[in-house]
Length: 116
Image 1 (cartoon, rainbow, N blue to C red):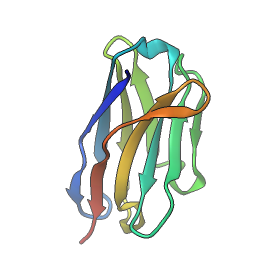
Image 2: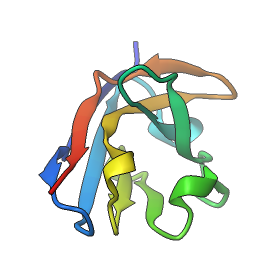
Image 3: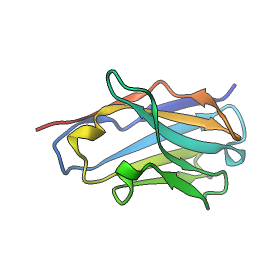
Image 4: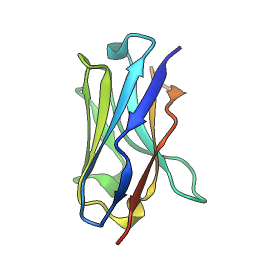
């Protein structure tokens, strides 16, 4: 019954920033691990970042470390992905996901395009 709705994607130039948001509904948000995945054309879906239910433990794939930050606001039932210093290789559809240990629930995806 969990529903995830993403926003914040768009077309930006290299070096720009975007902040993605994912609104969670249908269950108790503070119990769920949250994550951002991305999928570029012709490639498998890749885990970009995740954050545990309490917000104290995070993970980032190597290619985004130092540039992306995942955070959550449990009072607003929202998870964010702050993306700085965007590169063309960050171009992908970004998906929000939620679960306890496996990600059972997925958002619809939001397109991020980084191009000059």
